[in-house]
Length: 77
Image (cartoon, rainbow, N blue to C red; front, top):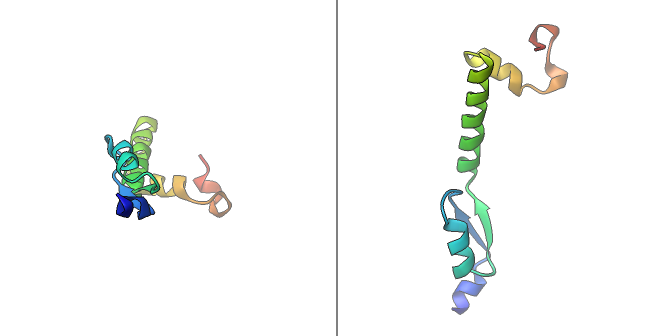
């Protein structure tokens, strides 16, 4: 039990009941969601939005991800 209390961080998948189980087993650990899982969710959501808006291809996706100051007039939506 003492070893479990010394665990400081646990990296988990964001789906399912992993965070609740980890919290019960390692009460002092900070739960960190894997970056891959977060980026996958962001990319999937962005792709769905682009399809709904009728954007196709990498060019339009790149425009949406550009920092506003770097957009040229032709890029404005």
